[in-house]
Image (cartoon, rainbow, N blue to C red; front, side, top):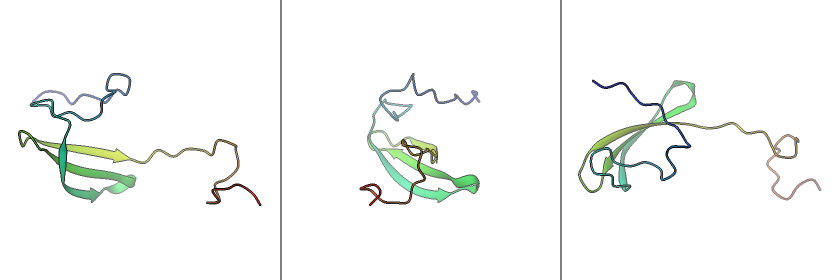
Length: 77
């Protein structure tokens, strides 16, 4: 079995591609929450039927203005 390749954002500007046919259209078969806040999604290529697992994790960002995010969209009142 080949070693798993680490995702490099600079190398992949087009998003997820099917490893078998290169198609970019997938159906999500199921989604599961994993420990540590990660999400597992099992996807199937719409064209050839190949199945791919993706692991997603939320990126925590600090507010641009340095203020805590209080949920207000318009800013302070």
